Amino acid sequence: MYLNEEQLEFSMAYLNEHHKADVLLPFVKAFSDLGTTSIKKNMWIGGSYEITDATIVDITRDGLYFEASIKQADKIKIESVKIHLDSDPVPGMARTYQTLPPCNPMHLDHSSRLPIDNFVRRMNRLCNIVKAYSATGKMIQLGVQMGGKGVGKLHDEICTSNERKSSPVKKRYIMTKVYVSAFYLQLFALLDATILCSNKQFTNRMKMTVMFPEINASMDSYRIGTLLELARSIAIKLAEQNLRVRVCVQGSMGVGIFTGVPKQLNGVHTLLQRMDWESGPGEENEGMVGDYVNFGFVGKDHVVNAQRSQNDDEPDIEQDDVFLILCPQNMVGLESSIIGSLSEMVDAAGDRPVILLNPDLTDKISSQGQQSIRGRQERLDFANSFETIFQFQNIYFSGTSYFPILGSVVKQGP
Image (cartoon, rainbow, N blue to C red):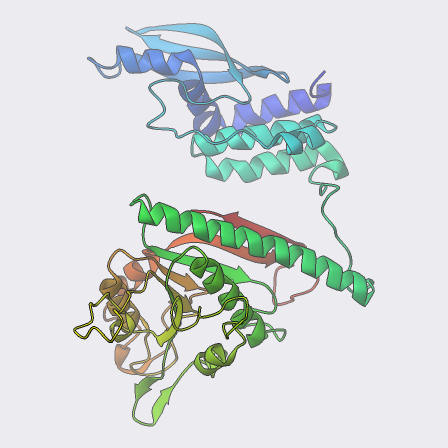
């Protein structure tokens, strides 16, 4: 038996009452032969074949069983339909509903001890395929309500602890394991996105949001060294792929005596160049800095294009392949928007990847409407043109408290 009697009755009643329009009907259209039939019959006369209703009558480990109402030529008939819980869209529906990879077998094997958890995971995959995104949270809520404390339990391979009760050694071990795992996921996502961009399959405007407590400037644990070490690791990994990287930080903004850089980036440009890149003679990355890794500011003047030397004694100038921009952000005050310089730089880069690390391109308070009304839509459109290729953030209780850390959310890859 898959779901117990109480879970089965409640799940069917809940879905039939609250999710016919957004879940059950799209399921029948996307994952059953009725969807293919409706496309064929409506090809010449639209509306001649219509699926008007879908009622779920049973749930097993193999699938969902429906009674679907079909309206054809003013007649209504009922057909029995079975949809597998691991279905892909039927032929003809693949354009409307793009399929997703099956649920991770390891996760399903773990959740098989709690059938309601197994059911919710597979249902959420189907909901995402038919774009019923708002229903996924309801499915999880259903599982928690019917499954008790066991639903949502973390996997055995995940290490957790209460930091206040843990020893310093254990806390350091857990933080290192989480950070290292997230770091490698970030590098894989970055390399995948760069390859797709070079093949014209993905935009060259990318952003990564990495909110470890030590990189989150809104927290008292912010440490500039962690940001610099992250930037160094990313630049070296790209350089190892024979890509020339320019690591950029925004320069001083403003007019007259009202100039400056965000406090988060104060001194970063200098520190980047003074870091140990192990690029000296005999070191691991010998000759990397100055050849494959260079530094600059945000602006079109810092985009280097390939140039042939006019003198045989001077080497050719190689172009930058990737631009990594650290924490670009607007500042409070007149003429302190980074958008202008950043957009000029992106235009000058052409189709080469421009990667923003922890950007904050929202408008700030300013006089004379510099960052309020004038050009606001253009600034929003520019900020939204960057696609997220990696995101890591911790989950806390609502409010301003940053402890305890309840978990983490990760989005990997474009």
